[in-house]
Image (tube, rainbow, N blue to C red):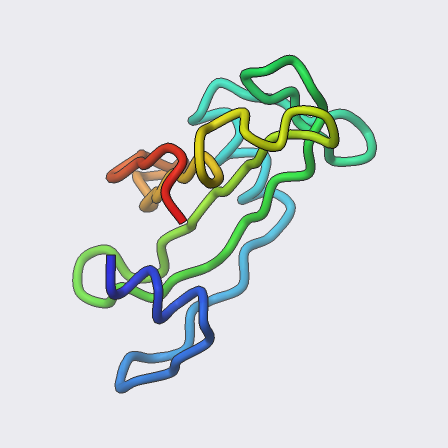
Amino acid sequence: MLILALAACGSRGTRPEARALTEADHLAILTALHLSADRQGLVLNECGELSRPQFLPAELGGRVGTAALFAISGGPTTAGCYGDGPDLHLLMRDGTGWREIYSARGRC
């Protein structure tokens, strides 16, 4: 979790800079999570409300390299959809797609 916190807070540490995520990465990540976005980039969360997810690159180094942190929260009327915080998924590249390696629900 410390690595995710450092990545989210912008700490550079001694790791190389994380490679930016592209729109193609976003689509592949959504596919890996069995989700889809509308034309505005909104995703239907588990509470049935549209929410704008975040796609954050996180350089983990080694075999993983640049991972992706996908975060989605409740919408305007269901802020507590996932508990005390967002639904988080950490994914790594797997061939031409992405594979989930960690998830957490409702932890800030």
